[in-house]
Image (cartoon, rainbow, N blue to C red; front, side):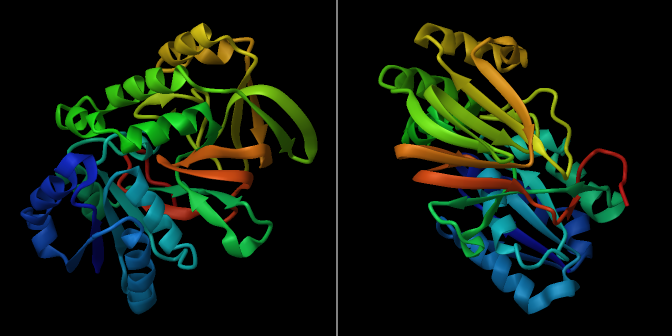
Length: 315
């Protein structure tokens, strides 16, 4: 059985349009497919958990049709069901997950990769715990988790009205540029304590701290251009002591990956990071924003099977 979890409003309604195309295909009609629509924020997580508990190993693949936030919810709903394979048909604004894991082509081509070609690869989510030091609060992220400037951009972008109509014009990436300019005017650099694989440092004048599973975030920015998907570690980027005018240059060059040569940018290959801020700061995880004073981040040792990519089959 194939379970479809659809966010109808993702990408300003693109989620529904993509599913209508998928539903009318012979492949969908040939297989045992069951569709479930999300109705509110967090619903995809509940659906994934309930469906996995009910159907377990009868699920051939759980297919997510939506944006990065929908994928984030489904992965957390499946945190106790690692035997359930997942797939992603992008229909959001940024769709960084599909870029990072080479899920290319039309929705029907991706569906064929899932059901017929059965192309798959190994996927290792990251894990994070916000404001608590207990594993019971541990969650996973698919793309990235960031603190400071980029998180405030995500918060501004998500609450904006222009995000919707720019997405409708297929210019969703430009909404991040507009949000960046608005946040830049009032942003205050932070003082934080960062522990990198056991090495504790106090850092002043910090603009952003970002951990990512693959090269992309913010709708295609190459925040970690040299990153390869792996299970043991991930890159940590810290930007600090940078003049405001140069932040604009940073985000212009991030689309081509040249920002890593800035003297104000440091990149580490890490397995575990802890962030502690003096005051609550914004964080973003897979494009969803919140606030915290502390966060523990590590690589998830439990791999997942991801269907639908264009890479060679990995067994």
